[in-house]
Image 1 (cartoon, rainbow, N blue to C red):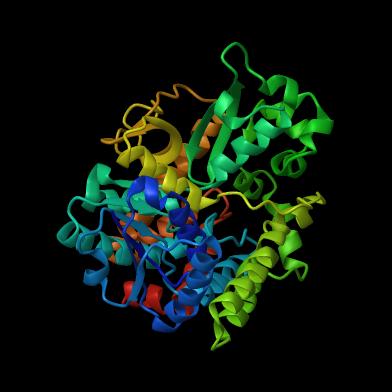
Image 2 (cartoon, rainbow, N blue to C red):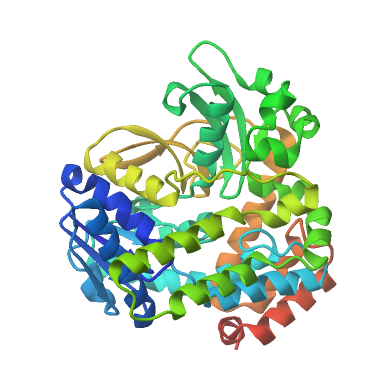
Length: 446
């Protein structure tokens, strides 16, 4: 089996390679091809992988290349995690919105739409190349905003593209721990879009365990979402939202915290990762050690803006558990071994959420086997969740059309109709600022 990783110089690629090492023999992984447009980033990540292989006492051969066709030829699975505009672009995404008093976040609100405007055209071209050079490959998308990008790419690759995110599985894992059970013992009734989902029930085969958890403030305080949203609001909802719903439910609080001088996430990562990528000549062992230190620092500050806004306490213990790399390899195992495994993925709705059309990409539990992913029927959902999902899906589709046609009019409409943007004038100023400060956006509308 060959796996191609697009964005192969990315900071989280060692996590992917580590997951591949753990499963190489079972899956017959013989070749990993790392593709990136930046050879210097590939040069910094390669010794980290060598150090990891040396530590594990096993190695899956990998090659680093800036030749896309070389990476794709013969691939059985294509993992894609790219960042058009780099972290410098993320800083602009966040700051432009904040300057207008709007949530500044990578995937949620205006920042996510701007990220999508410059990412969708590149992703569609990559998908076309995959269709040409690796026709039988499964395309596993990590690129943010994951649901929107997955929907855009489906036009080129159809059901062979699946979007993944570790946020839903992380929520389910944390809730399982809070109720004293293993995740594989439970059924998680989760529904929504990427970074816009809710956990509605947790069943053990006989009963729903969620109501008891919602009534127990002490247990709610043991995990991230319980601390973020608080027992009172969670009981009002009767559900546990994905952590990114904090930007909707507590939007003004988050903006206030971010504008009070808190370093944005993009600014922090640009500074931190810049230090990691700027060092040269490290041995594999030294490179692995430097990467691990940087990763621990990165994880320790995750969602700092949300915790600062709400006065909640972030997790004080660092867990080395599988993130999106674990989700990606779960997809590979389920397809390659025909496991018919239950995974929460971004895929075509079909009839899962009855208020959306069949082609809308949603994030729901799916049965995954050799033929791909079959979403389970979720059925009706609470009215406020349905309304928000429908609104954001319309915004996503406007953004995709704007990105593919170069229409400033459609981009402005998408921004103005986003629930977090308070007026058309604010949307216009945000779009103008993005066009001035983001080369890709300026070129899109030229």
